[in-house]
Amino acid sequence: MNILKAPILENASSFTKNKFNLTWYTFIIYFFISLLLTAVHFNNNPKNFIVSVVAMLFCGACVSYLAFTKKHLLVSKITAIVCTLIIQYTVYELVNPDRTIDVIWFLIFSLFTFYTINVKWGVMVLLVNFFGLALQQPILTKFANITVYTRPITDATYTDQLDYYLNFGFGVLYMTFLLVKLINEHKLINSELELKNKLVNDQNDEKTVMLKEIHHRVKNNLQIISSLLRLQSRDIEDKKTVKQFEDATNRVVAMSLIHDKMYLAKNLSKVNLHDYLTTLSSELIASYSTDTIVTIKIDTQLELITPKFLVSFALIFNELITNSLKHGFKDQLHGEIEIKIIKSSSFLEIIYFDNGKWITSHNDKSFGLELIDTLTEQLDGVYTKENSVGTLYNFKLPFNSENIN
Image (cartoon, rainbow, N blue to C red):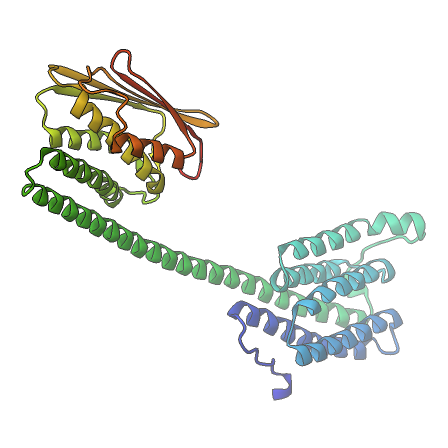
């Protein structure tokens, strides 16, 4: 019986193997069922005999194709079409006293199509056969002048009864088998999906831990650099150079804070801008330790921002706040800084204001101001500055949904 055994598929998924094996054994079994029905209808029921012979030959051809190509999809599609035509032929040509067998067979081939091809084909086969069967009685009565009637199967001839019980018994058994296969296939798919989802979640968790660790190490390295700059500045006597070291240290701290926020954030792709600016301003105020009480108000419509975009933001705000603390609040008891970020459909507007009385010229082209110019250009933005009462910066930056929320 090895000749009847399904060919072994190499390098195929378990789902493909299951569908191929089901297709193979369906045609093997139905070949012998058709052979038996051919013998039953020989010499007493020519129309049923023709149907049985056609079905037997079709099964044999399909088995040969499967054995040669080891591909089931084309066979399954041809089967869906041919079996639909055969069922419709039996519905309109074989005016049987009972349509139960027709219903069983079109349900069988619908389930077979569901399993071996896809849901779309299965629904199509089911609907075509259903409407064909539903329209059978009015069409035959109107156009063929045939009266469709029903009678108990016990009133039929012996061969018709044998045909009925063979079809009915095999049909019910095979339909039950297909339902079980579909249920098991559904369970298997769900099981594999759950396994894949668990694997993906585990990989995502592992990557998240790794990324957090990377941000943590980068933050630590930047803190070491800032500490080294502070230590180095202690050996420098020139006050101007010391201030330059102090500014450089604060720029490193501004970038270090980004990685610190990323390490602590639940979402590694975005950083809370309000939280970051609050921390940055607190760090800068503590760093310069001025005698002036400085309050900072932050009002932003932009909640989240990507780390790549935040680097430019951080350095710009670092320079603005640093300049205000160094030059704007000398001899003042209280200083105020206001930061407002407005988000529109096409751009971001950033308004920075301090109420300081600057002791140096606003027009001095320091490294900090040059850095603001460069970073603004990198963001494809522009800005204006006013210094009639305090200092007011107004930035306009193109809106980029990839960089901001």
